[in-house]
Each structure stands twice: as C-alpha cells, then as structure tokens.
Amino acid sequence: METKIQAFLKPYLAKIPVNIKPGDTVRVYQKIKDGDKERIQAFEGLVLARKHGKEIGATITVRKIVFGIGVERTFPLYTPIVEKIEIVKKSKVRRAKLYYLRTALSKKLKKKELAEFSAIKEIKPEKNEEETVSA
Image (cartoon, rainbow, N blue to C red; front, side):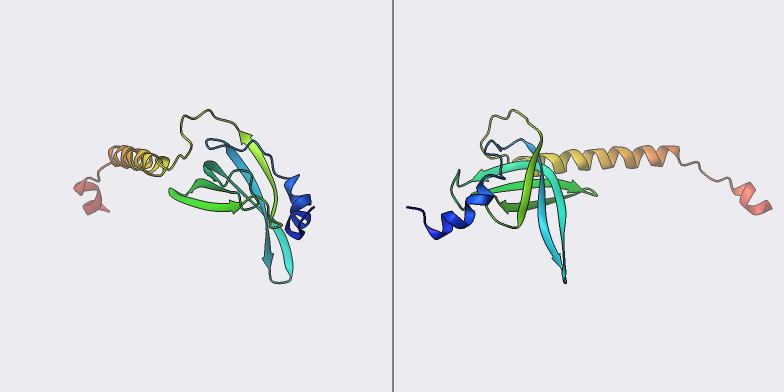
C-alpha cells in the first residue's frame, strides 16, 4: 500500500540520478520564485557528502568557489524545488565525506593569491623622482 507521501514524491524520484556520490561534480537546477515569476537557477559544484541514502529525506551537500569564497548548499534530493540534477564529471574518491576539502581548497587559494600578489609587485615599475619633478 502506497502512502500519501510516497504517492506525492513518485514523479520526483524518477528525476534524480541514483548514482550521485561524493567527489562528483554536479549541476543542480532549482526553482526560485521572484515575486510572481518563477525561474530556474543552476548551481554547479563538487558533492562533498550524501546523507540518508535513498530515503525520502536524502540530501547532498554541494560546494563551489565564487570569487575566492567557498559557497556550500545542501539540497534535498526528492523535492519539487529541485528541477533536475546533471552529473557533469565523475571522480573516484576514497572517502565517504569530503569535508576536508573546505580547508584544503582555501589553503590552495591563499597560496595562489600570495603568488599572484608577489608577481604583480615585481612587475610594477618604480617611478623616478626626476621624471615627476620635471613634469
């Protein structure tokens, strides 16, 4: 016998790929209401964790970096708000939860920013005092 919740979620169960795992890069299309209008917004990032297996309340945590700042969102898989989920890239990982990437990626970015800053500093020419006085 099918419960009301199962009957309600049946059409949404077919939309979600079952094989989403941590390490995959996914694009989640989510419905967003702007006043009277409704639009679809994509959120693309790395799956850090999948929780609650194949239950009704299953969720995935997706992380992306925007302008050097990490942004994480947790999406319930079986909900009318999520339009569809595309798997962009599959990766093989050796952990069930990839929370360590939060600090690892931020450390890499900091090193990269420091390297870029020092390179900019070296390129910048110094002004001569004679040129500024004669002008």
